Image (cartoon, rainbow, N blue to C red; front, side, top):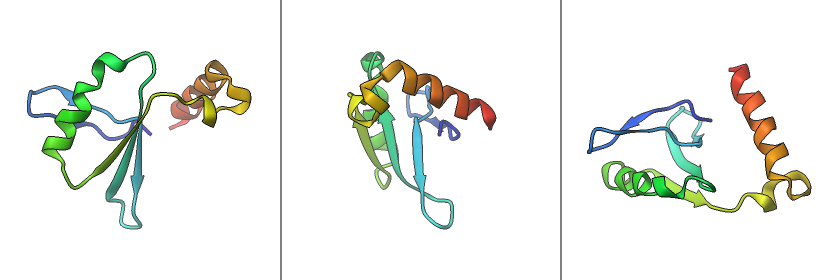
Length: 85
């Protein structure tokens, strides 16, 4: 997660939260988590227009994916895992 960076047509960069790869390492799907940062959703539209062959899914409520619905605990766990790389 958050390993690849894409340059958008407006010159800004976009770093997706998660990239799902095929067996050859090609990006097949991107999953973007938007909670507090919904003001940056426009980057998803820019990404779609520049990279139309990559499927992208936006999730704006991660509580169903969190242990006991605890977003802050899940976020801390995610950050710890990210720092290991």
